[in-house]
Length: 260
Image 1 (cartoon, rainbow, N blue to C red):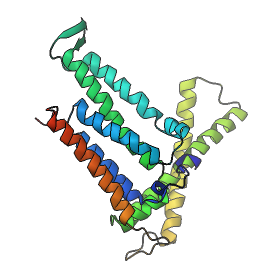
Image 2: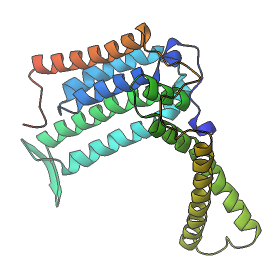
Image 3: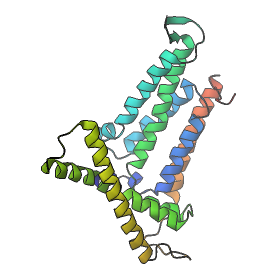
Image 4: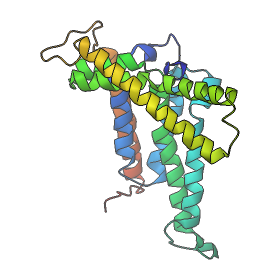
């Protein structure tokens, strides 16, 4: 369960309703995916890097949590550089690889856009507690309680799956049946985990049904989920960054709408 625990901190961002964090991340992502240009992504990324100082994460925690994004962004950029759409001056060509002026610009835009979309999403959601998110989705967004609680229960089991995998590995090794081929061992252990997961899921569903989680009617909540000034401020910041990036891109003539 420690893998699902939010980062700890005392900044205001940790107390903001997760629905507001989700809305801010979606606003940024929704605007940036409408265009493929490096200007809008660079402006958004520059604003985000400044705001990250108030996110309440240490430099080490920020680096570890966002490491997959830092790896994915340049990887996608290099792929686009080598195999992207050819346009303008040809710098280097070999077989299917064709590095041109257009592919270089597209690679830079792709790298920056992945960083601009991925980093704030990770930073915002590492401060989210799954239970708080479920409360917000049910009380603020008004999603069906049965769907929200089922999703929360499933999310809570992810950590147990990892613990079960480790326990199965140790148990099979103790019985001397983990010395075969790697592929065979992986498939056999995965099947055992699947059976265990199905049994646990069935028991959990029965227990939740017995406690009235599937009952019709209005459900009460142990904790009230509110959407007030600080939540509106976070959504406003996300909207402001999105509009600023669009404005600068349009003003410099770099806007490149993906649907045109």
